[in-house]
Length: 244
Image (cartoon, rainbow, N blue to C red; front, side):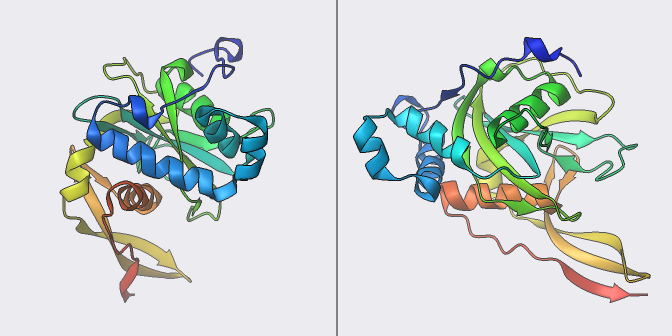
């Protein structure tokens, strides 16, 4: 852990309100992600009665969401040419070793909600300060290959932050250009996988980003982000090519 627990504060979490976002790409993304977030759980009558602010409605929707086994932070830089934060997991990890991921991890007792899990894990893995994060909302649950439920939390972060990979978990931090992801074609990726005591070749879509292959759960999260924010429809599949 890069920071002692007492140095991490989640008391003043902020929401990025679309009206105040200058860049059209990010404004559209914020509007659409927050629309989905608010529609998932919110009762309009409850907020009319309490005259709650827009930011409070978004936060309450996030806090009301059932707790997932793990949460990840889909962190995007707040700038004219936005970038998506990605990491490569360390080769010695017990699960998903060497794979590309968003910062995040398992829920811990005391987190209280998915947002705190995502921010705490991102801080531990990359030294991203929670007070440099503005929340947009959340994406639908994904299921990892180990069967865990994973909640993606979408947020804007300040550009130019000095992030440091936690060597015990992360071997590299890198960035994907968001607008390139919207238009960039996927590349079919081959994975060798053990199925019922047999080895199989599985084909699945992927992106090539800065020399890294982005696939699996991280690829599905990005595909869902692009569909929600920019109407990009991607068929995400896992097709067995052959068994031996």
